Image (cartoon, rainbow, N blue to C red; front, side, top):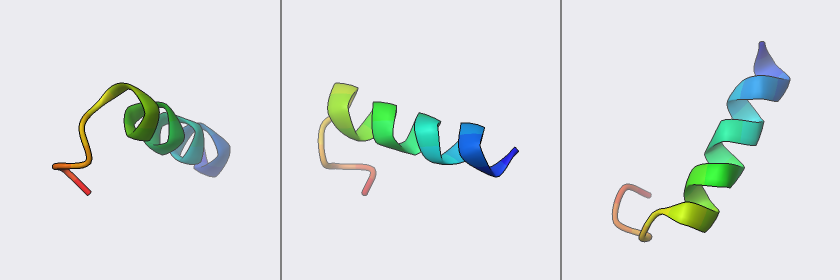
Length: 21
């Protein structure tokens, strides 16, 4: 749900370059 979505966004922000932002 929402929690999972936010968690994935945070994970991506940490493990991916700030290019998709």
